[in-house]
Image (tube, rainbow, N blue to C red; front, top):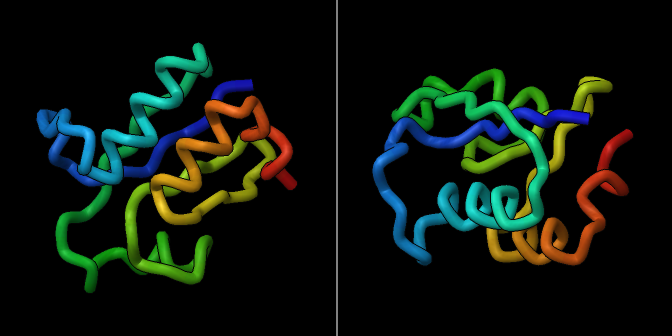
Length: 90
């Protein structure tokens, strides 16, 4: 099952403290296939993100079944590394 990683447009930022990169790196390390979906820079333009997650913050993961997963990036990375990402689906 491939997932979609909704993240900021700053794809070049690859430092440990950047929330989007932290989750993307965890997906890479876990070997989970994903598609990057860069979203709007301005929070005021993130209506779709808020509709699905209740927040206007990145990153978020969208599953094939249409459900979304959003927590603090450190918690998301920990879930991914523990092999429990798919438990968050549905």
